[in-house]
Amino acid sequence: MLRQAMLGRARYTIPTKRFLSMQAPRQPSIGRFTGKPDHATGKYTVSFIEGDGIGPEISRSVKDIFQAASVPITWETCDVSPILVDGLTTIPDEAVKSINKNLVGLKGPLATPIGKGHRSLNLTLRKTFNLFANVRPAKSVRGFKTTYDNVDLVLIRENTEGEYSGIEHVVTPGVVQSIKLITRDASERVIRYAFEYAKAIGRPKVIVVHKSTIQRLSDGLFVNVAKELQKEKNFQNIELDTELIDNTVLNVVMNPSKYSDAVFVCPNLYGDILSDLNSGLSAGSLGLTPSANIGDKISIFEAVHGSAPDIAGQNKANPTALLLSSVMMLHHMGLNEYGDKIENAVLKTIAASSKNRTGDLGGTATTTSFTEAVIDNL
Ligand SMILES: NC(=O)C1=CN([C@@H]2O[C@H](COP(=O)(O)OP(=O)(O)OC[C@H]3O[C@@H](n4cnc5c(N)ncnc54)[C@H](O)[C@@H]3O)[C@@H](O)[C@H]2O)C=CC1
Ligand SMILES: O=C(O)CCC(=O)C(=O)O
Ligand SMILES: [Mg+2]
Image (cartoon, rainbow, N blue to C red; front, side):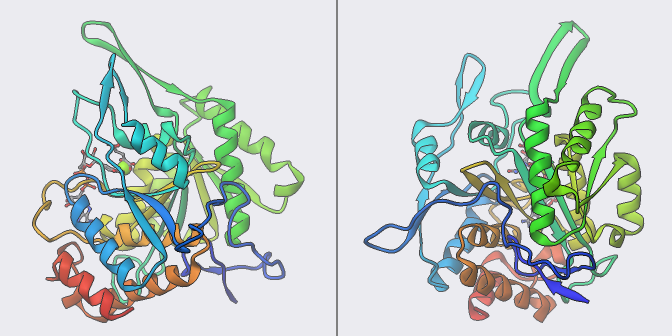
């Protein structure tokens, strides 16, 4: 039997046995949106970071579709040009104020220079607003054939530390050290979120993906925290499994359906890599996979993909991943009808014909013609 369970995206159709009799809530209890619409206009204000490369093109698409769907949102454009002080990267105060005020943001991809200049602005945003859980669902798209049908993977990545702590130094020329920082606090809050998320979407299992055979203390702590949490009364109905990352990667590629009833949770780098793999497998492109960066109060939604410099400025980018991220955002804000409407229009457009699809999906559509087709399908 199938039951429609909703969190972030309407199209979670989840096979359940144990949870059939339970009413799954729509959102985990952690990180709920508490913003209010403006009294006078009835509209919410959302901070919008358009991003680099293809960012402005896919952002235009989201804005046009939101306008056509009459979504009650006013965009507040945020400039996050990096500010470097004593080697540390920050973002302008106005952007920090905007996001702190609105409690929610939508973000296009931000490019990171390699080996020089500012630190990743994506990491800076996640650290600045303590966005500790990065939720990355990867689901097959109806009507678009990839290697496997019915891929339905949900991954939650620790988003503030691990290999992305940015603690690196030269010990002596030719010898560098990079510190993977794992703390009990950060591990606990993301794993707790993963348990809550699994409950909310009606999945009976959480799988900790790790390599504690090698990273014995750091990943060992992450795994132990999960085992401790699972003993809490609240989570005893959720099964906990642990898997070595190399084994998970093999299994995901060989048989992704093995994980349709689970939520993965993992340290930062594993989650970054595994989420691109999941995207490629479910969608055949990075152009379709959304994500949410969740904090206790503030959340920022963004695609899994980057700034795609190879196709930037050519009207070739697929805006779907940012659109589906905006759908996750609408559900997070409780604007479910609008989220469902836009999601259905996007999926209908992709399913209708290969002509509608952008180049990454083997089609000939441009970003603008795809956007127009979605608007026609609203
Ligand atoms: N969260 C973020 O803002 C992220 C930012 N980045 C940054 O993006 C820059 C480029 O990174 P890459 O490794 O090239 O990864 P990328 O994700 O930008 O591109 C990888 C491949 O996927 C394609 N692609 C990505 N998004 C697409 C879309 N919407 N439509 C059609 N095709 C799409 C690109 O054309 C390219 O062939 C780097 O500076 C990196 O730091 C990378 C990943 C995430
Ligand atoms: O910030 C970056 O440069 C890359 C981030 C990334 O790959 C991701 O968030 O998936
Ligand atoms: Mg990545």
